[in-house]
Image (cartoon, rainbow, N blue to C red):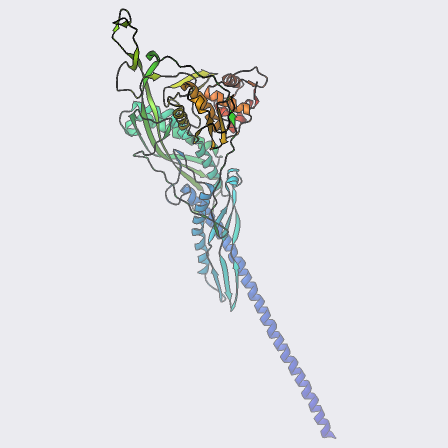
Length: 614
């Protein structure tokens, strides 16, 4: 009996031991799995920490790269090599998308080496970090926002195409490394906006055309201004000073500016066919125009070309019908011969402005914006006249004033009284009616003898041109720097009008009745075309009313086609309206600008808005 009991007890004990062993093994196994899971979670946590750490590193690297790039590109005025030209006689400033391209390219070249440095950092705990370089840096700004001052002190930059790969003890993770960051306290686009506004105004051209070109008449030898034409040299410096002051007044108190003139050259020649104060395209010296072509923009990793489109809305205008002129007798006593020189001058300068409002994360600390300017001009100056006399059909008896045979002498030809062969023109009638100073910086005293009339203490001065109606139109158009054509009527101009400025069957232009123009005097054609081309200039701005538009064209051209009033005044002509505006405190400059519907003038001289038809 005892033996059987012992055997049963042994079986029970073995069973208990087996259960305990199984439980122990299970617990050990579970603990091992829990440990593995715990360790895996630690790995995942570490990988996540490294991902966040290197994304933060990439973000900071992008900010540093943007600061360095804005400083570098500003120093070159938008180029990457030589300082970019913003004015080559006319404005050639870089568009916003051009600046974006060079900024993006520069930033990518600075940013990607930062990322590659992370790959070379010391590896710890068997962790390997690999960061791919960025394929696209995009400055997310657009022209309208820049010019509306929305990006003066902040703007957004995106970096795309980069990835982060992390390996840790046979575990790995990867993530995109795209960043979109707001850059604050960086006034690159503020500096760009001010320089662009200044370039568009191009006051340097106005000053040199108005004040300096005539001084070349006193200089006999071509060459460097400081050696051959001292007065011109002084005037060029004074004009640069004025242009610099115009620039300074646009910036706030944190920005200081100066300029460095590189060179100045002048020459002149007899006669010539230059009309107005225009560009001199091939000067032998001072002839740099530094323009560096940009490429396509990348947007969020994709290449995209973003051209800026500009369109204008043109209003239609008409003039009142004028009576046909009568032919005037050809008398030599009313005619003159004319002489002039085509004078030429060119200069270069670099304008520099430094902004000290904020310190950027770069060794240079501050943005210094440099802009190259070249002004190469030519115009008619040194004007003189000579009297004409008749070349008679017979030998005149001085006692009778008739031919020796008693017949009436006939004037066969008008010839100069002296210096035959010296003059630039044949004998012709010189008109002395009202003229105008061309807008946008053109200088008076160009073309034929300028006429001046003092009306309401405001003087306009412009040439009276001769030739066919097409030649007169082309000369005035060229003087004003306009790109518009003259077309024969195909739009149905009514009987009471001669011309319309409209978008007609041939596109935007000046449409006129050619059959009427062919029988019109040169005086009337000059006034007519100046009136119509004034409307073309107005179409680039915004006239307050049709009455203001016609007043401005009449005032500029001296045409007096309309009867107008100012508020409750009596009916009067355009010049009388100008006199009344002057009495009310409007400046001469604002009245002239108001004639072309410039918004700034309408704000300063609000009385112009009260002009109405009678």
